[in-house]
Length: 360
Figure 1 (cartoon, rainbow, N blue to C red):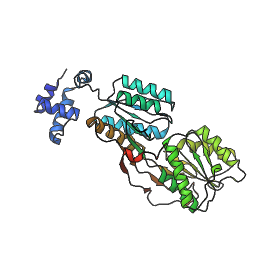
Figure 2 (tube, rainbow, N blue to C red):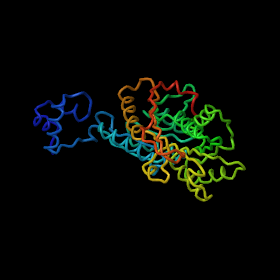
Figure 3 (tube, rainbow, N blue to C red):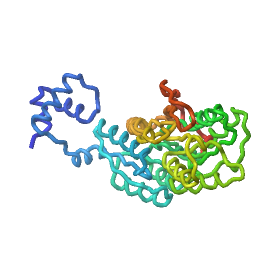
Figure 4 (cartoon, one colour):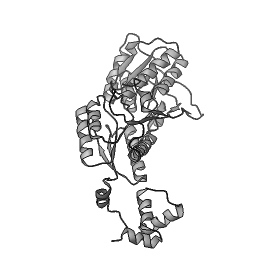
């Protein structure tokens, strides 16, 4: 079996240089790096991960805990995390907390016991057990998609997510601009920051358009298709139902469409529809779905980068990174086809403290 010394001799470099190339611990000139990689390929060299972890106390593995991995949105996040981890020479251990706080704490403990170097977690609606465990064991962690407001005196964590409020406001003002005065929202699971921020955006959009907020037009679909179908049915049963609808994620869009079909209503003739979350087949619906597209793969890849920066500098201030969404204008809102490009907001990166008090 080839050794690192064999690779060094073949590439004409030092063993230390081979180590820097393989472990990414120091920049190496491109031609030198390529010579090392060619030697690795030619000799069939493989690293001894177990031996290295015993020396460095690092396993070069990342734990990922996200719920609803079957959801296309989280699937794309997973692809971004996997690509980012692989790019930096890390393996990935994946667990599904099922959005259950107790199960969440258990799977995080399991990942920790597998000695992952750090974790990327999409927190549940009640992350108190998660926060307690990560803080007690000083586990390097990055929260993605859903933000957590840490109590005073508690540990702060890096967080990566998309913007939620302004894109949702954009959907509402767009529908209002088309003449709709009763715009319903099928919101996600209560307690999630994504839900509360999108509700804030919904109300902001109504206010900007000069429309009153009617609590009867806001229902919760619990971030799932079945819940959204039932919630949309409740909206349609109102004495004066909405004429336009915004759904809070892709799964709830499917549920809302089922409810509309069950009531014999068509989109957009009987009900205009916009959705938060674009997905691969949204462009194949008839009509095509007007949506906010989240940068899901970028969220996953950025979460890996932020975690690796945390591992390199454990004492650096915690920060929150927000990535921009795109407004994808199609026809379910009642508009004709628009050939122009999607509208994109600027990304922001802020100290974690600036997010406090703004999310649930």
